[in-house]
Length: 94
Image 1: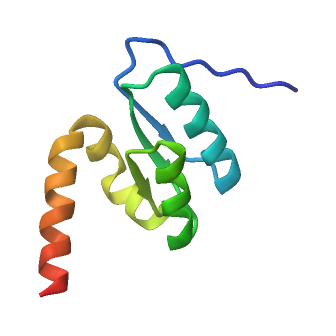
Image 2: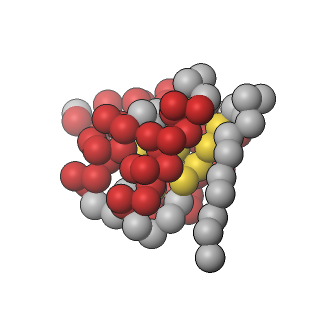
């Protein structure tokens, strides 16, 4: 069974949420090359995966526990999700 994917030019966001980190990195690389302006939110299994997803071109790397809670908000309102994430990070470092 083969799977083919494409990212239409008019797409604004892509969430790659496969349970395999390597597959999510590959999808991120492919999507970024097909549509440089798309917002990509990619799932990672562990904290160290997030940096790999960001290097591959993801705008955000999310762990599964955060994806369920914040994933749809990041897709629908990407700028607002970034602002909320920065404000939470500021509170945690205080």
